[in-house]
Image (cartoon, rainbow, N blue to C red; front, side, top):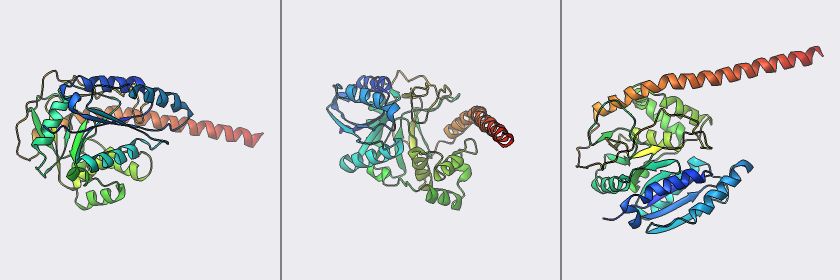
Length: 314
């Protein structure tokens, strides 16, 4: 087998990075895989210690076929770092497996990713392979397709990544023109359109929302495993770029391999409904978060008005 290179993106969490690497090394395919590590530079003084500790650790890594470390001299930010890194590696190797420092993978993750990338390499309807599976209630097939692209332990080929469009405004216009807003919002169950608008307005900086949008407007599919091969370890409030404390995405990593057979390139409607039903359960959590934000701004405003009144009367 021609093993696909692994790209690992790190920042300022040495403990998470170590756990991510140790999990990868549990895969028997690791010793035959090239590992390319992108270490982003510190955004501020607070991040310097963590970045330095992470860089000290990654220089000690052994066990892969080869290891290449790219230390960013300045802070790229997660989105720019991933877009630049994936583009560079895929331009050289033609395909890549992408993980971040807060992902713990199954010991069968690399087997699944390599086999699936080989199996669907020439199936043009398929844009990517994904390793994480949401904690849905329903038992799903061993593997299946969804019209999306995702971001927690994934892989693609040059032909797939060539479809990535970084222009959020152009993507939103195309989604609206093609009347895909409801589909983009996963059957109106998750506010992805709002997230894309936030990207346009500079409220967030997400490569993932643009990757998903790029897949949808091109009518592409992503392969998912019926059991998750990835655990998101970064939602513990410990310095992640976008993640606070959150257990709503918690899954049990599969302790058995995914047995792949080549499927017809068609979305699995039952799997889509199961994921949509799961997204519905997240809405109260999102509303609670939004309420906290609104309360914060409300009390900040009240405090400011009171302060201005005091100054006025003084």
